[in-house]
Image (spheres, rainbow, N blue to C red):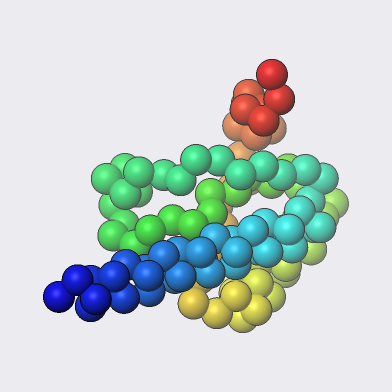
Amino acid sequence: YLKRRRAQLSARDDAEHAAAERAEALHTVLLQHSAAGRRQAATDPTLSGRRDRMVLNGTYLVDNDHRDEFTDAVAAARTQFDGLQLELTGPWPPYSFAGVDRGNP
């Protein structure tokens, strides 16, 4: 039993690590098509109404002139990052992008 349980936990850890790497790669791609971006905390599943785990909650500041380019980048990422479900919302007011940068004191 313990050997099987360890294998299950290891497989889950591997899957979570792979998802985190893919989320970071996706974030990097989207940053290339935006003026700025940041990773936000994942939305609580009880608030989103979704059962699957959110691996990236990114906000991206996109100039109006580059909105179509960003939308195209998201569409391309849907194919490039097969297995991740991407949802694009907005535009949101610029103040929704503001926040405290927790990485700097």
